[in-house]
Image (cartoon, rainbow, N blue to C red):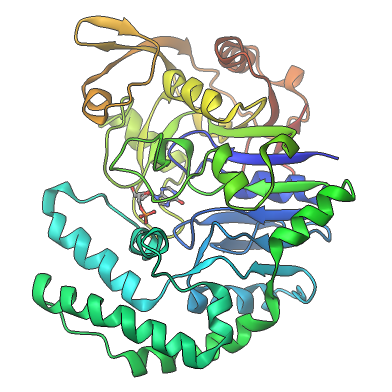
Length: 424
Ligand code: IMP
């Protein structure tokens, strides 16, 4: 049975939610393995649109069980809001949602720290989502984090939180000139959320191992994208976790040898939210048109996304990082009315041509993209059910990407709805 990772092959927002929703009808388990409520996975079905931030996107298609793995950082208040929203759509989460006892908790002080640290960075700000992600992973690796299992023991939880706040309040007051956080008030605000979350707390690593033993199918849902990976992305303009395939293993307890498929999701163009280099960014009418046609505004923060042409140097890098052996192309329809479309096939860097994505972020900022132009197809790509029915020029565009990367598109998405999809 397949154990498939769905990974963002760009800077996030590639449309992973729709793909996971589609694939989940055949999955026994759908598992989030990293990130937190910085993610916004949009699902559209019937007349409903829902944006999931923490609950896996498998909740609405079929009966797959949904797991929030140990690698995720969880804001209990945000999770409870989401649980209530999902239940209001008639989904019963009992026996469908499992939350790892080992996942770390995002507390209100992480969100305050995220905001004050961003403010103090001034023009070097990362452009975070402000959801406390970085500070929560800092607590985790500094070994002072609160885990989901700690929520079950009230007195030791209070003690740990108060100890952490001693240090944090000193920094807030003395370094950032902010008000200190009151521990008792903070704990009191958290209590109702803890009660709601409790029934879902589980040993999800054992659940995964039992599923593997039984040969059940598992779909691992990445958040953000490969180029935001804390190790392999455009550091420091990255998120604080590992969206790439390695993160799927550490963030779920599934061993690397069990993974059978790594599916990369890429848009037919590129976007990025937040700061950091973006070689193919367009600050012209074409960029504006991509933003307008693609409704490129953040699902979590509402920020306008930066837009640009598809970058095959970056895509190939993402493919190699995770060993992607299948791809999905999303938002193809956004290009339907362009006269000319470009694809970046190499970079010029300090007078040399290269097809390698640089590790040094200042080099990524200096590269000049080399483009191959394509004539636009100027007709709709919606409502086709096979690749062969697509306009010839669209087929040429897609085939060029496949030949360059050596990986086939198994799914082509031409709109946000489930039925606007070509499965090959
Ligand atoms: P953080 O994850 O909130 O710390 O933000 C770090 C960087 O990752 C910022 O540039 C964010 O805009 C970006 N980022 C975080 N989550 C997402 C996402 O789900 N989609 C796209 N970009 C994201």
